[in-house]
Image 1 (cartoon, one colour):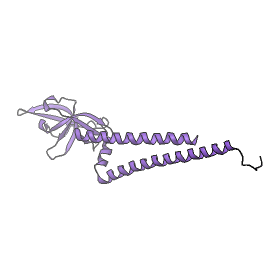
Image 2 (image 1 turned 90 degrees about the vertical axis):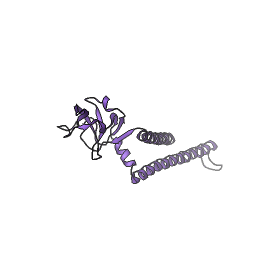
Image 3 (image 1 turned 180 degrees about the vertical axis):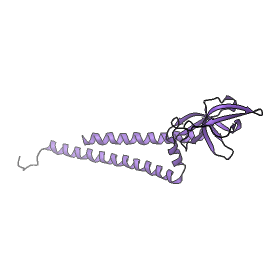
Image 4 (image 1 turned 135 degrees about the vertical axis):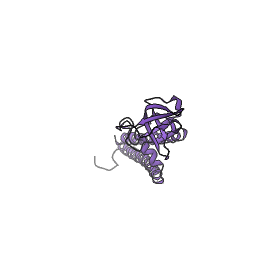
Amino acid sequence: MALIAVKIARRGLIVVWFLAAASLIGLAALTHAASTFVIQGRSMEPEIPLGSLIVDAPSSPETVRVGDVVTIRAENGVVISHRVTRTAVVGGERYFEIKGDGNRTPDPALVPAEAVIGRVGLHLPYVGYVVAMLGTFSGLVSLLAMLAAWLLLIVLAEQLEEELSERKETAGAAAREGPPRGALA
């Protein structure tokens, strides 16, 4: 029974390790292939929670409509993702009024269309925490240490399985041979 539990645990560890590695590889590919940002405030809650990873679909300002969530780069360089509540044309130029879903009022200034980086096409709740962590040296070292610990657990489970298997074989061989000669039965 113990041998079966060790085998199941080892297989589970292997599956978890490969899923974690594949997920991290996929996440790395996603963050390099698309415009991705980590939500660092609560202004879009509850729709997009703090710590979400958002993926922007490139879009021209002409395709942005009221109700879309867009990511913009403000004049001071800050990146904001808010919902478009109104469009306006001022002096022949297109502008957007934006508002965070969790905010009571729209942002104080209209945003010029050329400030739009893209339209939010996907958001992955809480995945931004992982991306932010992996963006630091200590976070990367922590991840590598965690993966190494998983590999160590897999190796230890393998050794335990071999040890239990050897003990079972030894006990089975001893039972087949019967009691030693001259021993009292």
